[in-house]
Image (cartoon, rainbow, N blue to C red; front, side):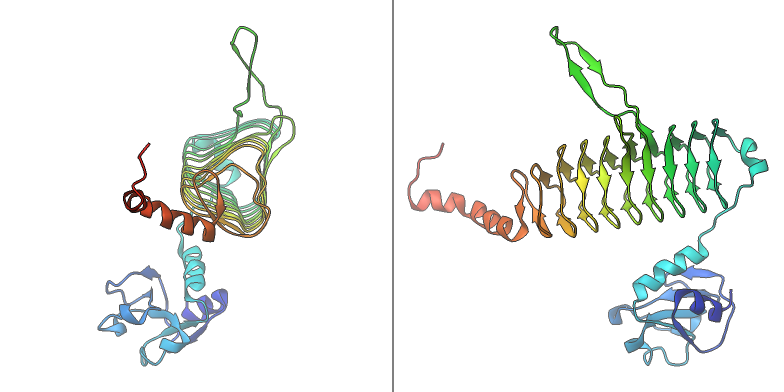
Length: 315
């Protein structure tokens, strides 16, 4: 693709020769690829070896004489570049049965459907346009997936929820789940995630949500728009997660929790009460404002010295 065309797609400005670009590179020598350099401490000795350099406006003089892609937000432009050059192979309707895909009854599949091997799509599933599904993915019945959705290998959408009741003999009776899963547009779900269907109503993932590997979302959870969830997060049933939340790795959220919009939860925190104000929160038990938790953590490290100074008997 010509550099001018790439600049048009990313919304950036190009300087230099309108060369043909074949992809991206790190700091190896590729005369027809783009390298991203927007840190002044990470400048290679010979910048002329690359097809073009993606950089910021304040560094353009450093690379004078090179082909440049000038961006106000180079990291965002880099993300757009990866989308341009990702290697995908479209699958036509006629090829579906020849690529080890099991498709149930009353299934609607939109345009530009891409998938890996051993994909199972059960009855009454609806997929929007530009959906990409990795290997060994299962999409259970009554699931609705929007446009421009990416689902990583090994992920299961619409699995049975974990709802059980003890009888008077202490035997478990499973609550069978009758709901489905609804996933909005522009959602990215990485590998080996599980999203349970609702008990009666649906589990809902709103548009723009991004989910890392190894995340579990239980029945009847609602995830608000543009929320980001890192790896190994577990969200228990009937939680209502606000918009634009950022949930760090290995966070555990107990059932029926509500969080406000624009909440950041630090990695490994346990959330066992509602968070009704935006801000950053950190904690084990109980969760608290991040600023409060830092003060508590400081004094925890001083407890041993306090005990010695005041000759407090250890418990």
